[in-house]
Image 1: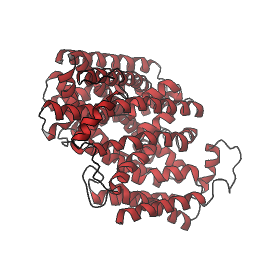
Image 2: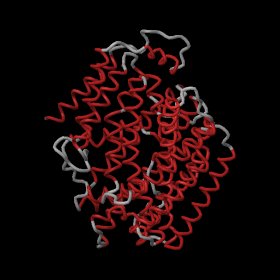
Image 3: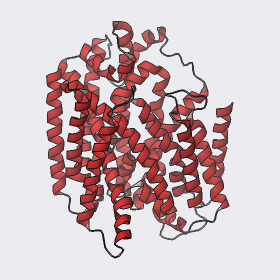
Image 4: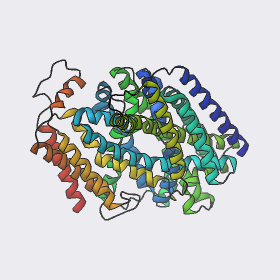
Length: 520
């Protein structure tokens, strides 16, 4: 198994670097480097988007978390799948029409610089949490493949990641993510079929639904006991449901699309690919729990993230066991690449350019400068990601879920109202983000992973929503609200269009209902 996994790792590294080199040849301007010239087709964009959105959490963290936390935790897959559909319907195509490269540029167009910098601070915290989880997954995979010490494995994986990202920019990353999406699909579906067969499942040839025959045995051992109140399940849904609308890797899918229609197709394909991988991930969670209960295997609770690898090693051929590691590697690389390109883009736009204009007001930032600064920022982000993962948490899912919760509680409502309610103001947006961020940080590690009396999103999200609506109603409307009509494809602006009180009233009622549930 070690030899085959090592072979896959070397082969993937060569393919990724070579693909980035091809992307480099297509890169002539900063827009090419940052958003692939807005020329990525729907199928490639959707498959690459799936790869960047589905992180190693699904390959490693999900299986270990379900084994450790039980069946109720599987409910987290539903909102994460629905969130892409929500983004596709409510934000994505309209965000593409703004011409913005990142969420911060989108917020700046609609609400001004203060909202953009607040969104930047929130996104950087999210990126830090996600980098921690993904680099741990990358290190675990390389450690498992090569036998290196974990920290040396993190260094090796981080080096390959940084080189191919800096080399090819968004063209290289987009094409690599498409390749990584294929690796993820094959890497999870093929080993799963053989794992189910070794466990005696008669419908092993159906990796998406064939695991159902394991349910009776798991039910007898109490696997399906819910044992949680409604607050647990609602707080499990909210981070995934709202977080995708503001995630850097998801926003990039809309930004690099050829046009609005291409963005819709990309997100539609993305939902389809996500559904396939989610089905396999659920099957693996069932199979792994069943295997631990019936095989007598011993596994330290701190090693939950290794459970999927242990299962495949014990039940399949070494080449297939190595294939699941390759899928996890591809998932880590794809998500980390999206985060690195985000760090590079915001550094150019919100750090280097303002600093140069302040020091030399009459000077312009050239295309060459932007590309060089972006490449340097991506390289620095790669180094920071390695340092973050040097002492990782015991459970991979912890920083990842907290990162999604931060986005959901601070940026989901501003993104939604920016597109659909003209009366939303910059003051309401900034106040909403400040309330959401302040409450999340004061609660510490919130949510269903570490159980507290009040789960974070169940309290913070409705408070942030109410703050945005109330402050927006009390402050004067912004002149930039006329942009909303253009984003929706209207040539002429109309003051009364999308200015109805119905949407804020419905959101306020839903927020009050969530707060009532939290304190009941």
